[in-house]
Length: 267
Image (cartoon, rainbow, N blue to C red; front, side, top):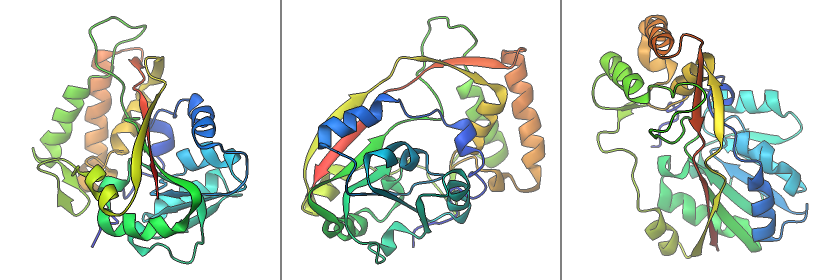
């Protein structure tokens, strides 16, 4: 059974701690798929709706689904005009109908991939597409060149998390000793999809981030969500803020944005 506690407590931190997708993403996807404001979008594992809201203007209707009730509540607060459903991807099609595009943003690896790939394929209308949006939005690119402000000390942050939660990364009710699983291309081909077409968008832009944003970025991670720290969450946050203040007394950091990859499959 997929774990619906992976991001418990992370919902309010996501919009603050995750860097926005590059604005060019909508134009690139519009051109790649010939989108014209018609049809429907289904964003699976939508979280607080960051991608759903960005892509919604490309469609007549946008629908987001996520297994985390807190994420759906946050999405509804941010974009009440869109359609939001609290359900696991494994429950699809769930009577939601057909869609021109079904998108997954850093979410497919958490799911029962073969089951979800099979369930979604008949939900995509002829000429439609499955779009995987791959991006690391909680942190930027490492590098030696000086920026306007210090880079966030991500290695030291990870070490601090490990000092509280142990050396093996936590993930909801379980752990991820070997990281998240791969093999998505094999799953997609086995389910009957054609592709993929890969498109890189953005990357390299310098982003200034505050200490509050870095703290929320940490709490937005599956292996550092607030509930994992239990009654020590306040102590951990104090230590995290102390670490950040040591690196940047002004409370400001800079990073270069990573590229976003669109991986397009056709049913």
